[in-house]
Figure 1 (cartoon, rainbow, N blue to C red):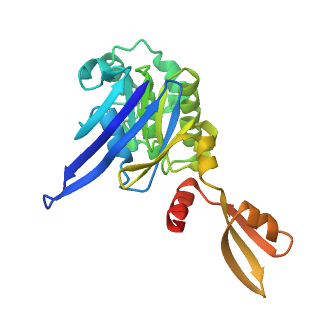
Figure 2 (cartoon, rainbow, N blue to C red):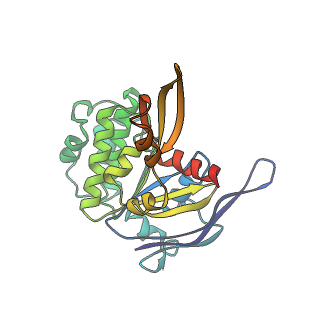
Figure 3 (cartoon, rainbow, N blue to C red):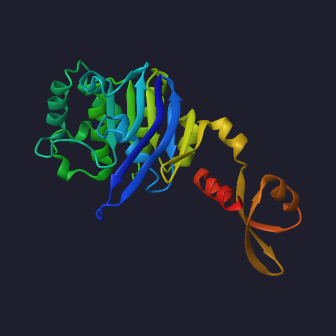
Length: 275
C-alpha cells in the first residue's frame, strides 16, 4: 500500500515568492489500483508524480510504501518504479534497438526485448534514432523502455496526450495489463473515456489541493452527471447545461439538436461555480 500523509510541496517563483504546488494531500492506494489523476494545468499533478518518483522531495508530509518512507532507501525504491512522461526518456544518439539494449543493462532486466517491441508495435523501426520518429513512435519507445523494469509502481504523466488513436490504444492496453498483474498505476490523462474504462480510483487536484479521492463509482455518487444540450426554441438554437432529470423532462417537448456529456473536469468546475 502507498500512503500520502499531509503531503505538501512549496516552491519559490522567479520573484522569490512562495508558491504552493501541493497542500496537505492525504490518500491511500493499493496494488492493482489504476488511479486517474485529473485537474487543470497547474493543479499539482506532475508535482505529485515527481514526488512519488522521488525526483522531488516534499516540503512537508510523507510518502509511505508498506509503512516505510520512500526517501529512506531511494535506490531500492526506484528499482520498483517506472516513470513515463509526455516528453519521453531515451538516448537520442542511439537507435531504438540500442536504446532498449542499453536500458535493459541499466535495469539489469531479463525481459524479452523482442516481445516488448511487438507489444508496443515498433518492430519496424529498430534501426531508427529517436529524432526521426513521430511523437507517437517516441512515446511507444518510452513505454517499451518502462516495460523493461517490471515495476510495481507505474507513473504515467499524460503518456497519450496528442497521440494517434492506435498509440492511445497501446497505452490503454498496457494500463489494463499493469492492472491485471497487480501493479499500482498513477495515470495523468485528459481522456475521460479512458478513466471510465481502465481506472479504479480518481484523485482530483485543484490548485494543489485534493477535491476528491475515491472510486469511480463514488465520484458519480458525489458529482451528478450533467449534459450540454443544444435545442431549437422559438426558431432559435440555444444551449443549456442540464442534469439527467431536466433532460428527461424536456426531451419530448423540445427539438433537441445535440446532447454531449460533460467531462469529469467540467462537472467539477461546474459544481464549484454552483457552490
